[in-house]
Image (tube, rainbow, N blue to C red; front, side):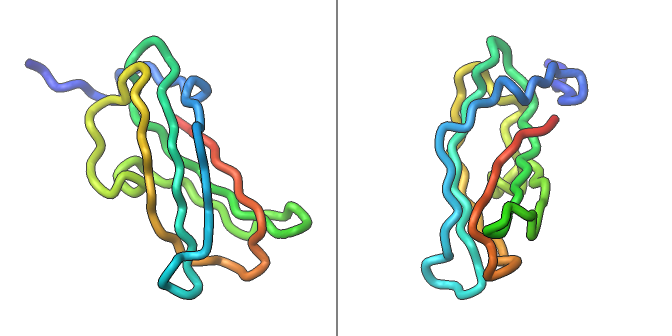
Length: 111
């Protein structure tokens, strides 16, 4: 069967629901953060895995760091071809702590 080109797949990042999210100090590594999240494809169709945008902010709401993670980065391996309707994903990865001033975080999904 022909392979599916993710570029041909309908993308609707707004249909991806963030179920849970957490950014905490790494349990064993100083100057690192552990990122955990769970999200679900609430579209009625399969879609390409989204980029995960993580923004870390200081107490005044000013961003101290921002980065878009590709699916293979946040999954730790090449993702299945598509995120199926209703499919959920639990992710966990570690990042360097950009600043001791980091107190808030926000997640976003992009095509």
